[in-house]
Image (cartoon, rainbow, N blue to C red):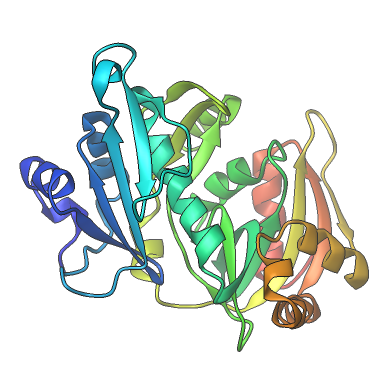
Length: 305
């Protein structure tokens, strides 16, 4: 199987700047083209273990990230994104090309993949039990996800939980974990073995770095999981850890608020979300200590609280 890491740096750059490379991420094939060198270096690091589909097959998303032309090629250079010939976003500074790639890949799924109920949530699995983590920015979701990946959990996704509309299974979409601001140093200290991309400063979300996905999670990207728990995490400095059960009706409404396409799917979305809630215990989780959180999540993985 051809992977990104099996290509030399020159081969990868030539493919990306030419006809593109068809990157396989979970159920999706992404044809990516770019002539931006900072993007190529981070892409090679973060996606080394991902399969490359052969040319000529079906492609879900066509993504083109290029240096802006004209004066912007030399003065405060920028990168712009084109999707199927359209440009849905404003250009960004050239140094933000790799975060832009990750954001645009998220955008493609959340706006186009309506074969699934899509929840803005991380999802991880251990001992055959998947835990979904819906949470707004700043809740500590990605920090918690990155920490759990160092304790034997399989990553299905950091950003988007894909719920199969027919059988309610969770479809993996493992991609690099986005860490922001202080979370970057927290994970560096907690997981010295973690592989991170070069931090990019002054984005609209502050300083951004991405955590490389464990190779095992990528190798199991075709293996769905069954939901067991929905946990709404919230980091609070100095707070005692607290895991409180939530009523099903409240959990339904909170997950619905975190869905990208619940209203688009109509009755099918309602049925899929209802099935997910029926199959899952739901909790509000407050934490301040990552070691304590790891121990609590191990109990969740074993089916105890």
